[in-house]
Image 1: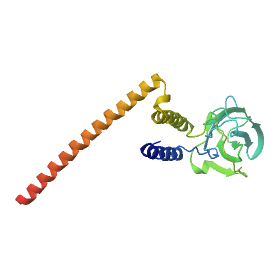
Image 2: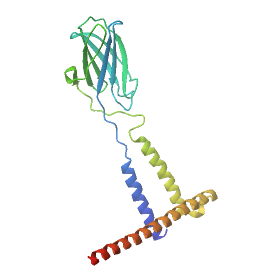
Image 3: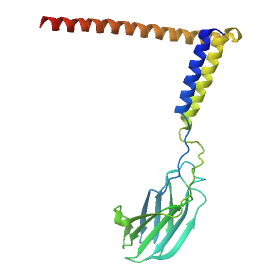
Image 4: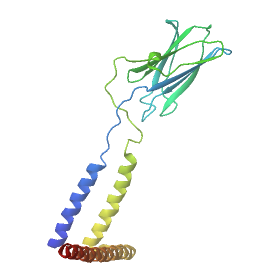
Length: 228
């Protein structure tokens, strides 16, 4: 291997190492429930609960329990083994209530985080309101874990980068060992090389034009300065 090719090889290896650093996959940290919308239909005595809980994998990190209290007394709860969507879950409950009853709902995720909201029953349709006085967020011994995502955050970028690296190594091998490359690949390599050569010529032409333009501009500035 010639010195020029060896130097080019080390430059390419360094470039690939830097690329791998940029696309390093970082596990997704566990997140707590962020919002909850409650709606109580007085006519049907039905409580609807919509919890916002963003996760990477709904089978390993999900809303595990929803607990309902009426006027501060436990009414019912429901357990789950996964979450319907990666952005949250929705469920309905049959809850007998009268006007001015307080319905408090707590959603607990499988990592131990919880979110509590409440509403006051009216004779029509009651909903919880967003002000802080209507919202309490608590944490019950959270688990210091991370999601086990099916497709980790940044995984798509890493896949594309990996494909690019493989193609790059194939081209590099063909450049080092042109005699071992099939005719079709040689033709492809020749076209790629021709494309780079064309781009290089255009780039050099543009830089030359820019250099001449800047030179003319500096000369005009100097001429104006000397005339003053």
